[in-house]
Length: 369
Image 1 (cartoon, rainbow, N blue to C red):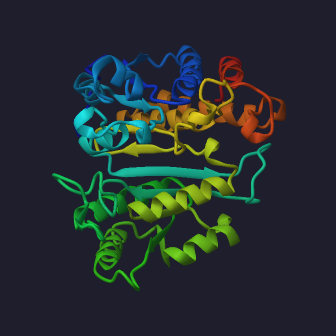
Image 2: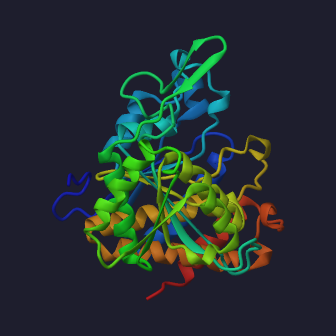
């Protein structure tokens, strides 16, 4: 494994923050405040820096993802990526590159890890839930990432549109491995989700690959379920599931459903991870309708940042980073447990900055053992 930005005796961890569009600058500011407090408390050696992407970069550099920023993302130890408003971007030949898709593709971030759990003090549809959707992130039906060159969908005539689905043995085996490795740290249960009764070739390949990987993890129980049944069972028995592994589009949909059951997308963190790079990125979008109003909930991005610290700690064998990840998560949970600290999406009146200040204050005051 290649280790970036960490030489012998050097404990510096370089984190690149890309605020993005819409509410991105507000929630990244709140997240950075919490990370600064965490860095001081644990003496982590975090070196935080920012670069513009999205509409701000388009205005200043003529592209939504400058090559220099992509280079810095590749060189960083980790990236915190704010939401982007791709619907407002010009065509690619006019500078409208999708930063999220480009970074995932160029850094080969094949695992999109999306946890959802109920939290004290947060209104939720599910009474109890603590699961993680491990979603394949580089192929499937998603046309912006499933081809080496060109798009995975095309229109041969005015009346016909065709979308290509790419499923590979390598892609399936590595996402399955990521899911089983995660399950070993949790409740040792993996649920494989597919639609193999209809998509017999592509989902059949996915199923066989997961079964092959499962043989290497005999201590982890493997179940399987069709995707439509899984969508129903998430509502009926959400507490039943631990780690759900699936292909790109199924995982995107099921993880949004799980997030809503747990209280909403404003609480939904995610980590895009590969073998040598990882990017913290909240599941939700840029919410331009509430941008610059100071009411966005930064919880999802804060928890995503905690996931990034956990990923770095596990790979660098640094217990301080692992403890800091737990500390940040517990601090967010502590603030969420207090209804007076809730942002408007949770029925409160706190601002984005106030929520961030509350989390930073808890981090600075209490250090879990």
